[in-house]
Length: 299
Image 1 (cartoon, one colour):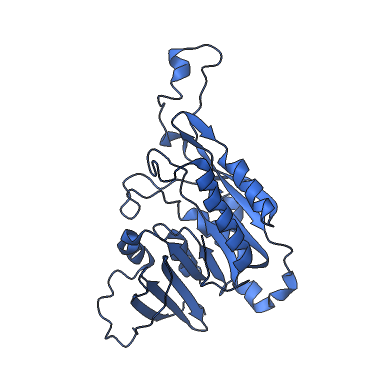
Image 2 (cartoon, rainbow, N blue to C red):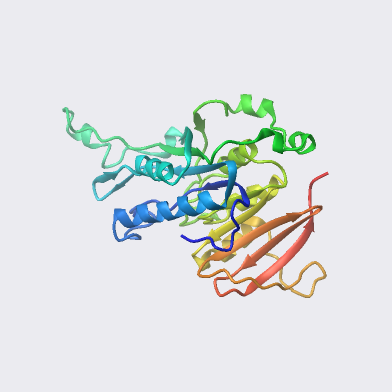
């Protein structure tokens, strides 16, 4: 994965969830083999280290995967890759899904059919959020006014137990309108990460944008955002999720045509400039769909 259009040390936070490795329910045979998948993770880690500012965070939502009866240690391998590419391992948060999400499957049911040792294969209700950091953060680099504007609600932290390494969050349920056939993470995940690891007006990057959840939450929290997605068919979903599905005309005085070549990527870019938020949607051919400017919610 190359992100040549993004400048060195220009990103304040990265939060993403890569595709599951050949998940039979989502991405069956997407990758030729496991080494190819790890190559994608390594390229992403390398480019992310380049574009991320010193001291800043990469939050990686990832987990091990069972494919055709074989369990792949994706989390451990991803941690090793990020360390080799220069990141520091800061923390691991466990995302716990509701217990009612899974029923006994063929895998976990083996022990019920054969109640003897060596027949135990559990179903997974957990995913990992690995927190990496690039170098050391300079807390004095943030002005007091921005610090106050970005202040995290301690009541919310205590009520929802953000201070724990286990986060109870409801996953996106199958059949959700904007996530149908998409392995999207819940809005609560980027919401917490963006609140905890970035300041108002900073730029958040999602290298695997998917349905656009990260950009939606970044805009809600008055952060800039850049998202990269190679599946062009997701454009209607992303447009609707970030709130631009009803933009029909380029003649409106709030719209203007711009041009940006994005290689083979399909990019969605939201930029904040003082009192305005700019959102650009760019196709893989470089043709701009629209650019809308709206007033920021910042006071």
